[in-house]
Image (spheres, rainbow, N blue to C red):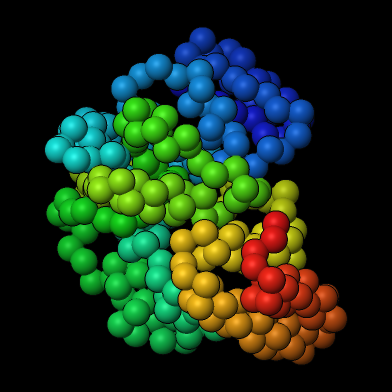
Length: 275
């Protein structure tokens, strides 16, 4: 097993130094989630590699994931993620690849206001029988077994999605552009508490980075017109959220934060994506 410590504080080695089964890669700075995963892959030679977030605890064997990886045309498989309430994390553990419409409704908060709209149901794979195995656009990267040869062919995660978000979605899309499949496997179970890997990011910066990664993904995979529509939706949604949250919290900080997002999205809409 390989642990990549992105904290720059040598925390991982201190916590697991008593174990002989771990190899620790310590970075002197946060290189981002995608770069850290790529580092881990470079020192592994196994046929399969399991991506596992630090907030995930495996509750079953991994044989069902390996079996799904060996199916004809399969590139990888994700398992069933259970929340702290013991229920499957529907809407998160499996999703379809996002369309421009899905992201537009997301940034305008319409998916939250009307979660059962047809676009959101398709995107979050709602109403599916999670007790059965099926092909899926994007299993959650928090608990995902991949064939190492596929990873090498695609050259891993795009490290431009810094520090986190959408790198796994981009990778899943590139897998399917190769004509390969990904599976959801309910027999492989893990508990996922969520959010433990980004406590160092303040709330404001989480929003800025999330929108920036969303725009990078959109620019990379959508047509110019669809990308412009997503940019416009981000501009409108950011303006509305900035005003609403400033009133709610009686602070100008949300306006300042969403102002950064709006300016970036506006620039992307006019001139194309820039990091």
